[in-house]
Length: 326
Image (cartoon, rainbow, N blue to C red; front, side):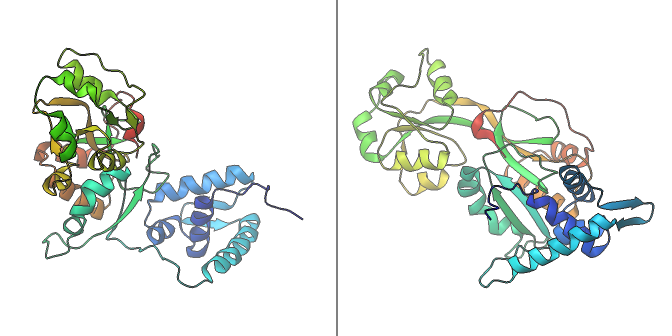
């Protein structure tokens, strides 16, 4: 009989349920999975709603499983044991020093990776060692439900349901591979329109740059679009067109000579980089990592203190554009 079409409960909810049933406590399950008590509670409530069954009796001194919960625990324990019974598997590290951080591929690859050892405290950092678990995602996640401590994104402003801190802005300018730059030469901004332009999923950066110089730009058939800035930069290095520099994501490629500036005129990108977190009290390790990220971005101490101390979201911002996820 083919069961492939039968729906399954969300696996994250089963993981939270199994941990709570095994440890006998939502708090202990949160500690075991490096999540918050609230995240465990929400995941189990979601599973109960999906199944249409009550799995736990909530009591003043903890929780106990219902008969339905006991039957489900037996099945999930057997299933997880089968899944775990394999070799060469990667086990996610756990513990109070583990921090879950999500961001876009470009931010992870071009900004976080060169700083990862320092942010984790390896090499004698007096703040102590952390372990950062990176989640690379284009989606706008519910940080609490996904168990994320922090997120770095690029967007218009603070988002509903999050506490947000502006890390830095971008003053963009055109780049090209050295051979293409020689063909472009110096001159007025409109000379760039004779060459293919490269942008990511949103062309607002190029529109803003040309508008600052009295020109109206709309993407053309000869221009190239890539979903992530990593690919935009790779295409530029390969001489496929002109891209906008997005500091600080391009420093390494500039130092290596893969690209060079082709026009000195800069324009402020309409979006900025933000550090986000779920509302509520932060874990100590997440506070440490937020301080280290803010130091790398030269954030003012007063702004950082407000971010760390806020218990509720700071307000609603403009909707963020597609490449601002995480």
